[in-house]
Image 1 (cartoon, rainbow, N blue to C red):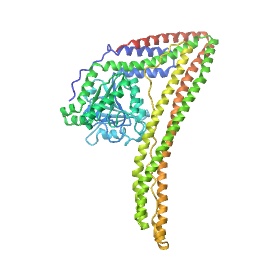
Image 2 (cartoon, rainbow, N blue to C red):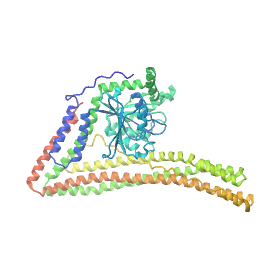
Image 3 (cartoon, rainbow, N blue to C red):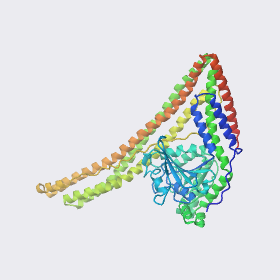
Image 4 (cartoon, one colour):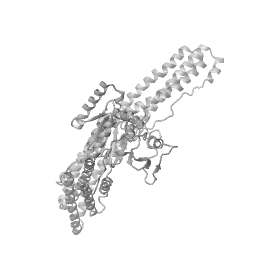
Length: 600
């Protein structure tokens, strides 16, 4: 059913040859500088490896439960990736071209060997993957899986394409949103999937801004249109287009599809159903893109990241050389000026931390409001049922037994979904607040770098592709719900000594108090669990981003201090170092100009 694909041609004289030469020259340049720039070397070597592999990484991105895994299954023509009514994908899955279907699971601990799997009649690949990439099989990634790679013989992959199934943003599961953001620097283009249930959210628009900044090409798909009539379909397309226009700076092309019906058509070998599902248009768009634009977009994606790496390295070398060349007195003055500027930076950092603290208090207040509403709903849903039994059942032993059953049955049914609901609300708000805080810290970090550049009259250019990361951990829910431990044996003893009316009144009072106590314990379980998660997430976030800023300040200050120490060392050693730095700066300057001019 897949349209024929042109032969994939690459060669040493292709459009990526210039970028490969730039990377080789940059690494050779670093060889002359010793071990002072190992982090830059590692970053450039990773980009060199991506370029040499020639594999184009196309990720399916979007909010959880938009149908990303189903879309990939449709494109591949089989039920390969797990799908469910609940958020599923927790680990990024890379689908690579291969001669036969097989999978390999890689773990975060490098010393742990990968697990290889070949599907058989006894066990499918979907069953195997379910143990590692889903929240059901691997909750909160307790197995510490880094990624899963699948080799697949699909024609769509034979053009050097790697498809990536990503965790969706906005779910309540740990790691998912974090991984969805961190995967962006590894991608070259994206299929961004939305659906009308609900329409595109604020969290998705925020995510799209990062995608638009990081990736040169994005395809927009509106899924699940088979649940809409024609008027609803057109209205959904119009609404989505209006939301995307400000981000895309123009009217985007949106393909409306039903991935579910497309998958069924592929499995049934139904070309007409494939066409009606909208998937034929997606397939055609991808085939044309791979044939005519893939190489250009691939090079543009890598160019952005190479430019950022070289720009950062160039600035660091310029700072080192400028500091080294300055007379000792002037260098000390520059160091003093930088130090004098740090209190202002520290005040801005403190202001950002105060804002974060205020955001923390606001989200805790929101949590308390949600908890109060849960408490009220619990009383209405559960205690009201007890009250009705108090009025209708006269036998105290029967009354206690019935109330015990009500509490035993109703508490899990009521509180489990309430836990999930409030957890999702709080997490989504926390992610939005932490995203804003991340941007404030990014601006502060860039301000420090720009300040150092200005002090030493070094041209400064902000990075083109910001490294996106986000971290918010959803707490693990306790399954130990508080269930009544009331014992009706006391009724048999009291029946011998107390009047029926007195027994009934005392039993009702005790049951009412016990029911209220049990509801309170469950409500506090929600409040305590989420509050602990909020406190820990905000604390970790503040510490991590504070460390990023401190690291930037420390690196800049150390470069100046090292230069000051070098000034006091042997002149011959300094002269050699100046020559090496000067040559490296000149080379990197030429490389930066070449990257900016490079047209893939």
